Length: 123
Image (cartoon, rainbow, N blue to C red; front, side):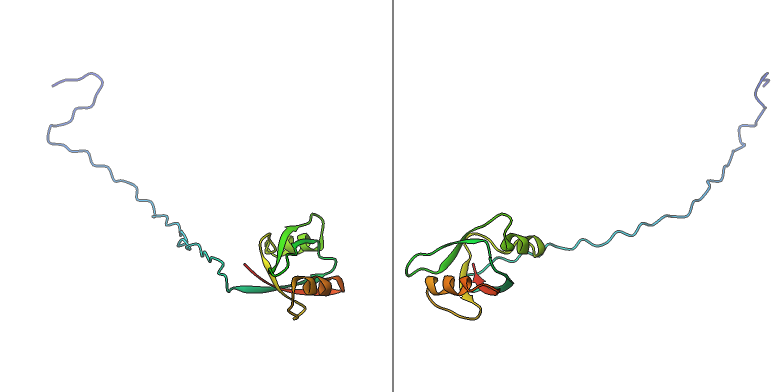
């Protein structure tokens, strides 16, 4: 058979090409770390220390625990929150002030003394 433009090949001729093998590129993907979620429990307490004036509005009801109502903007409490992950929140109960327990009024009186204040809080 005659072709004008293509080279003549026999029907049994196979054309073999060698595929260029590239090195496998392995990307190291870190294992996912599951999120750790801890729910606050009623018996969980924690302590915070910062300077007075605190800048906390509290609910002072006779016979009830002293509860935080709000954290005032621009206060030492708000500054503490920004530096420590926002732990001071409305609804927390103040159990102790500077290691002292007592009625809500007694705790407020201790806070009003000023200086460095240590609060023991619970949810």
